Image 1: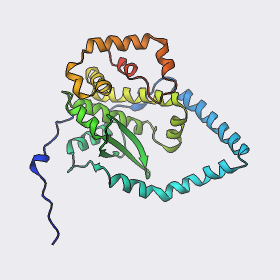
Image 2: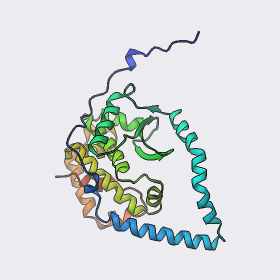
Image 3: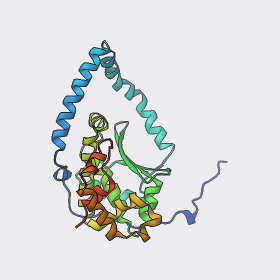
Length: 265
């Protein structure tokens, strides 16, 4: 007889409510200025690069790109199976508070289907939005969930989830668009600002949005000791410093304090 697994009541405590309710949000209204131009320039540069690369490689690059979709189709089922076999899938029976938050945000953003959400163990405070096997997926590292829940305001997790869902809603996770963002870091940074703006609109409280980003700077252990007034001042100094934008040029994400400054009233 197969053993029957019985859930440990001590490990089945509910999470705090994430409070994702609110009015509909049109993500297109929060696209960072300059994104359209960056996309156009990026696609032109990418097309030119593929043309030159194909010529220089005697057509080998074109052949590789032609076969890439076939390779993707072969491996996509394995990719989603690997993720599902190594992470916890969020559902109405597993972290239902997060599941409900995702469903609510999807409805507010006008998404036809909500992304699948997985929580995986990692020693980084991070999250990500990707398309895997043609499906929208959000990966939450356990440390970001823990950090938000320990921050004193669980709505910070709503902001994080909203940010990742904004990437899906704005089309940032499609294969070509995602590849373009990886190749052109300026576009990636613009996309991060857009996703922040959508998440801020979903949360509707700049203080919560700012706390969510502050968590990424110091983690939950030091949040209760953080002097926010001093941090706000530092963020303003970073924005005023012309070298801060120069420092970002090799980064896919804006400097955290430049992101934080967007929510300082």
